[in-house]
Length: 489
Ligand SMILES: *Cc1c(COP(=O)(O)O)cnc(C)c1O
Image 1: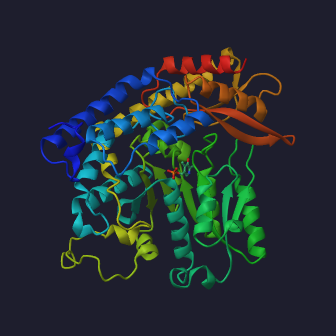
Image 2: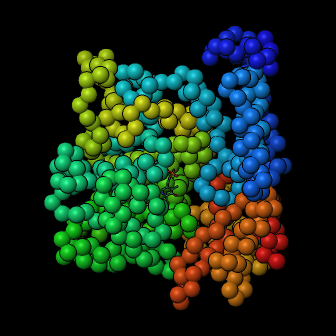
Image 3: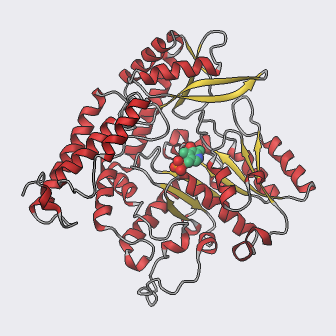
């Protein structure tokens, strides 16, 4: 059978030898990508001509004239290779997207093929039980008690944060599930720092509260939420007839890696009887490295936690986790009466929870397998070693930056380093933007610009370098600094 014969593909299954040949080609292409990538540019320039060429290339695929399976696969490989920022590249110092674990890639392929329906427990008990097991194991790392922990895999941190807001609403207002926001006795207020992730603002909109419900608070010099400022905002809102509902502590802000003082915020939340959500989408990595654990000490008192497996745990997107120590709450927030879901497990006393009754999603991909298999093979110790390596690379960057003419302008124990040229006006957004653009255009590294709080009314920015890849080595850090030095001339 020939993968490159167009006549071979009239059925969707691509039966027999043809399918085997396709799998072989697929694994060969993935392996080729992984081996050759470090020598390739991290990204290629984006311009109007390249975009036009890309659209024409895609439009050349004509669904009236099907192509051969091998050609179709090759088309996708070439397109992805040519037209993306290569997040798996060891010199990608970008957003929190890692190089995926090999076990994670294998898991995602397996899940696609077996395609378990994980809405109903009885349809896919292996999948449902694996997810429950992994969630409990991760929750234990955050200090949640096994008996009262619940959680759900999400598409990512944004869905987990949305879930947190729904849980907070359901918890504070039993009438919310039926009457919606119109049934609430007082308008709720949500407290976040101006460094928090914008998915929380989106969640407020999606829940029908509107963005005005979000109190975006100023931060201290370390870009952390100040408990006294939160307390003052809560007091103001109570006096004005609002219901302080939710306080979000960001453990590792997206921009600069700042860690809000979770222990003090937990005290405050308990005193004020308000839901505390820890957004540890990326910085939750501190829970897995014993010497970093104290950085997020107190997180076990949070009512809920967001932690993304597709960030510091290096599994392919999308894999987020929502964890809560209120075992009944997801069910209260999400179960609806239905009459068509399978009842196969109704007589089985040992049946687990139906995932659809715990999640915003209904039919859902088996997200947890990529983390389960990665953890099964690397173990906690393997993950801790990888994270320590990333921390060491960040320490190296901080240490080597001054000799290259840069100063470190953020303060975080996490592997995220924000730099600015060590000269007057070095941190103005125009200067930073020019450096970032030149560095990215070189294709040698990928970095971004982070906004810093203004100083004396003047906006400030920094070059944001996040070590997020388990392959990044000292030579890559040296290359980064050399590239930034050239870019800042
Ligand atoms: C990345 C991030 C999110 C959003 O997570 P997604 O996985 O992109 O949906 C939320 N909060 C923080 C702090 C993040 O860093």
